[in-house]
Image (tube, rainbow, N blue to C red):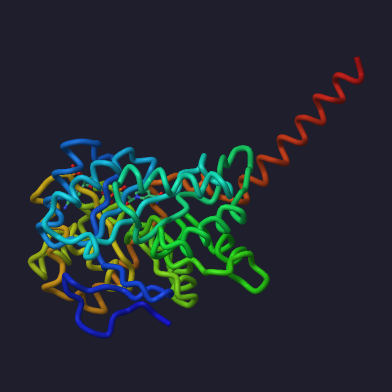
Length: 314
Ligand code: NAP
């Protein structure tokens, strides 16, 4: 199944997740939006502009501000899709069950729409892995209704296979995988895997954190449609069937980033944008590269063995 929508994309478009929930195609990311006035104002502007998805996390330190803004808006809670994330140190069965309650408390909500495991590792340097027991707790959370959908973030195909392939540990498959995704990091293999397995790919850092918005090839396309470069880059992502969560704390950019439903990129322009891929990553992939972790662990064992030999030989 593909998440590509049959009808024309519009500001109200949603994707149907593999558990039947509906998730908006665009949302506001709030990483680095300061807790307090800044995040509250950004969320209020976004809701006013038509955004119905807000992406926060325990690690962003602004769940409380998001919650205050949602309740101050005139939109019923049931019409706004809230995502938050379990942070690394909270992984584990009991601590995950505790962490969701703490997030709900900060948000002042009795459920969230999507709860994600923020990273596949507790501490990648120690290679500590609590993915299975953490997912068991996520499933409990889903069954309890505290989260209407559960998913993962920064998971590679290997991590997804480990949980969902035949014999994997997941009873309930993840509904979403939130990863870095933009034309300069076109993770086609991962996107195809997610679409084939009914996992919605949610694109974070969809503007490559602003570092590539002036790219000349993007400018040439933007001129043709009379749109901005940021709008073209975001439109590319949703035309691939992904959800996007651009972050901004500026009203004009919040408005600009959602104004992407009055044009459609041609197949040729989609291809040109696909070809901008240069494996340009904003977020360090080593943090979740299982091969590097294995290498690190081997090196650590080797060095420990040498250390023991030195001690014994004295
Ligand atoms: P992003 O959305 O790609 O880019 C945000 C940056 O671009 C900000 O500096 C913003 O500045 C600027 N910007 C916004 N709109 C613009 C426009 N129209 N033209 C030019 N610049 C613009 O990067 P991101 O914040 O890293 O990613 C988005 C969201 O994804 C985050 O906020 C977070 O919710 C989520 N995320 C998740 C993970 C994860 O591990 N799961 C990792 C990273 C991000 P101003 O705010 O000053 O306008």
